Length: 129
Length: 429
Image (cartoon, rainbow over all chains, first blue to last red; front, side, top):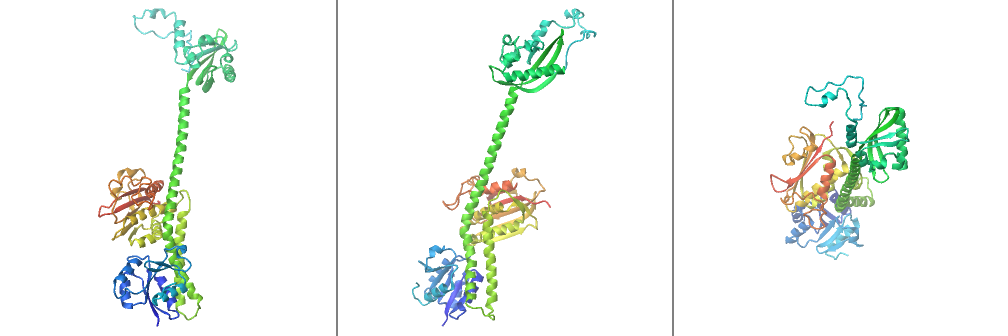
């Protein structure tokens, strides 16, 4: 069964590429939401296994969306993976991601394998290493 | 006084005496035409002009030396009479005088020397304006000279010139310092922008990475995604390039180099550089562009800096919703220019002048009345430490001045918030 990913990012071009890449070998099913304000309703509708969330967005940013998701009983347990262009490569380290109090943070640009593995592990409830 | 030889001629009838009987000497003047020699002596001695005479035949020795001459030369009459220039003055000066004297005698008429410097043996140098005249008398040639002491005037002029040079020098240093200030502010802007620009570039890069990875996994000619991916990639490259070029433009160091510029394009360019700040602060940008093709003659990089500083200030002033940035760029004819600009800005502008007006207004807390006069002071800032050096507005004002424009910052009249107004003359077509 395909892992359901809700990708929330204001850059339409980027989310298009994410969807194409993740869905290519049928491992994932991706729903794209470019307007952060609609992220919550999209999540309630789509019921993703993992939410992929950009940090810097107009209107509600990634942090705001996370807060909303956690407050909603139906969504609170869905793992969230952040993506951001804000980090310097050095800050990220060799693993390719960073753990923050709010979860995993992936730096942009991210390579496909790292993205898939992170989403896979998060959706399966496994500790991400 | 230096003009004519005033020797009365004996064969002419005397001028009619005034019709009065009170002057007893009136009768005597019929036989005596010239006043007493004694009176002449008094006149000569007390003239406010230095007067001297030399006996040409007798080695140009001094035979006349009036009081003013004593004063000017700082040599007493008794020490001068009977002596030559070589006894009284430095060798070089004396030789020069002799040369002049001989030339005058040879020429036979009055010669004026507009400026000569005399170094006496005891006193300081003096500057003189001198006239020399050979006079024949009793078959003797006498060289008569009158000098005016122009030392004060000359020294005054010299001092003025030195002061002027000093002032010009200081002025140049000040301009230099101003340009350095502009440069310092520019570097600060670049620093602030770098984080935002990096973010703006990383997003296109993220797209490119995914696009390449997709293509690397195998290109199937029938896959409709390929065309879409390639399109998106091209687009992303364009976006990244634009923003990096904008940053490079900003960092180039040039003096004021003006070029014909479209004010609307320039404004959009700056907004692009600030896209990250705009998004991060959830600012809604309203653009009201009405230039109708009119252009301005400005230094692109520096004017970019102006708009960057002003718009950044506006964005940073709005830390709570709603955050609305209103930018108007329009052409206008002076006369219908916003009133808040003030009358003293008339130096560069005349009514009827065509200008481009930039109005940048925000919905922040506005500027406190106390601060209004201080905003242009270098290093004055109301921002938290580290959030800005406070150079921004002093640099803005300086750059606009260099462009013969006008800048005004104040509070909005329609609601809370500040409004910055910039006027720039248009290029006359």
